[in-house]
Image (cartoon, rainbow over the protein chains, first blue to last red):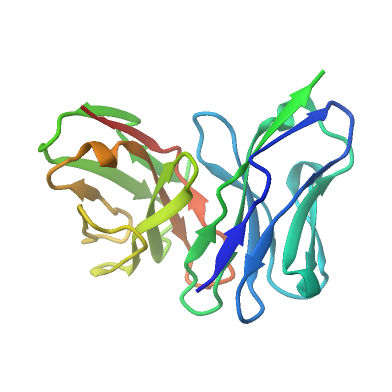
Amino acid sequence: AQSVTQPDIHITVSEGASLELRCNYSYGATPYLFWYVQSPGQGLQLLLKYFSGDTLVQGIKGFEAEFKRSQSSFNLRKPSVHWSDAAEYFCAVGDTGFQKLVFGTGTRLLVSP
Amino acid sequence: DAGITQSPRYKITETGRQVTLMCHQTWSHSYMFWYRQDLGHGLRLIYYSAAADITDKGEVPDGYVVSRSKTENFPLTLESATRSQTSVYFCASRGQNSNQPQHFGDGTRLSIL
């Protein structure tokens, strides 16, 4: 069965600084990988997804993620963080069979002035 | 506007009562999902449905019942609510292909006293 680890529960970044959120997955085959963002009181919004092909994936709001098979990682990055990026971020892995998603426990991003 | 809506947004009830959470989507998506979100656990799958009249258990199905008589609706029922079911519940839907992302509702915050 697939699993996802997000090792950082909280991360604080200064506005304008770069960001990297870590995600490691466990899955036997090539996974489907997703990053979602959740603002307080809201549902989850898709930031980006990886299925195959180019390992560097561009998403909305200036985010990108890189799939590294050798490290079983799919880290999320943004070159310059804005205060509005403060939210909780979830990494998820889907199997290529039925397509259930398994979510990590999330990383809460705080943005300091 | 097309989308996925959950009702109610907030619900307080007592242990032993039956409560039903509603989910409606206007995309005619084949797949629908129910998750619960708890601190430290991320999102955990309760039940899912591949089509009308086809449902199956997820990771944490005990104490919950679902039905799907129409493609657009996927209600979740707690037949006899317990305090451990206090949580935020999210409904999601997805198209037929497994590489399509899931789209989430805004959630129902359920408190069981």
